Length: 392
Image (cartoon, rainbow, N blue to C red; front, side, top):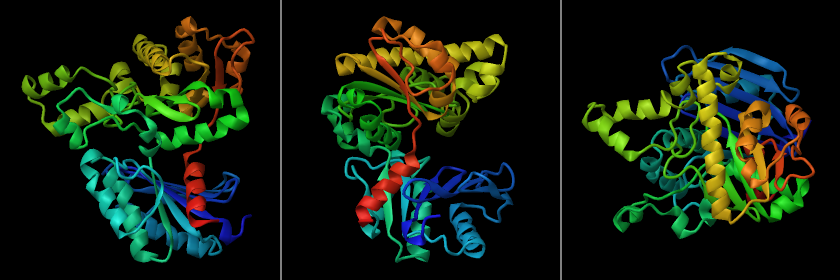
C-alpha cells in the first residue's frame, strides 16, 4: 500500500452525489460514493471500497449536504485507517470560463473566480465549490487544485467557439465552451502509448455514458466538440435531450406556459433515452428490453452519434482514428457496432469478435480508420495535475 506521502484525494461533487478517491501513483487506495445528498429522495448512503474493490462500508450517512458528507467521511477515515492522509486534494470543477484554462492551486481569489462562473453552470458549479470551501476552512494547510472540465477545449478556434449572436452576448460569456475535458485529456495522454499514429493524427473520441459527447482531436488538441455553452447541447444522453431547435423552447415557454424551472427539468431530467423510451435512462436496460420504444431510443442514440462523427470529421478535414470511452463506449458492444455500421461510408470496418470482447483494437486489417476502446480515468488525470502542481 502506498505511504501517506503518496496519496492524493480527488473529489467530484455532483448535484446529489459525492465521489471521493484516494489515489496512489498507479491505483486507488479508497473509493467512496455518497448518494442522495439533499435531494429528498431518501436517506443519504455511502459505499466505500478498498484498493481491491471490496466494500468496507455500505450504509446510511448522517449528512444532508456535501460539506456534512465530507465531515463524516474524514471522521470515518480517521477512525478506520488514520494512516490514509492525503498530501493534497484535486477537484473536478465543471466550468473555468475564459480565465481558468488550466489546473490551478486554489486560493481565496480562485474561489471567487469560480464562484463568479456560477451563472454559466448553475446546476453544477455551486456543488463543485462546496467541498473546496469545506477543506479550505477545516484543513487550511492542505493544498487544493481545481481542474476544469472546460479547460481542454481552450485550444479551439474563435470561429469554432462562436454563436451567431450579436457580439455583445459573446462578450458576456455566451459561447461554446465544451465539457468532458478531463476525460478527453486523459485519452489524449494515453494515445501515444496505445497508438502513436492516432495520437499524432485526426481522431474523434466518443465519450458515451449517462452524459455523452464527442471530441475531435488533432495531434492531441481539441479542435471541436459536441457540447457547447452547457452540457445539454449535442448528443442525446440518459435524461438530457441534446441539440434541439431553439424554437421548440420558445414554443414551450410561450404556448405551453412552462416556467423556466419546468423547462429545465424537462430538458435535463425527463428527455434523452428516458424520454424517447419511456422506460429507462440506462442503456443496459434498453438493450435488454424487447419493446419498440426501447429499440427506437437506442437507434436514435446511435444515429445522432453517427451524424456527429460526420460533422467532426469535416471539422478535422478527414479522420484517421475513432476512440470509444465512457461506460457505454467501453462496455456496450452493440452500440459500438451500430455506430460503426452507420459510419461505414468513412471507411470504418470492425471485427465482430474483437468488438464483443471489448478489445482495445476493433478495426479490421482493411479498415481505413482505426477503431479503439480506451477506458477513461478522469480521477487519475486530476491526480496527475495535482502532483505536477505541488511537485510530487
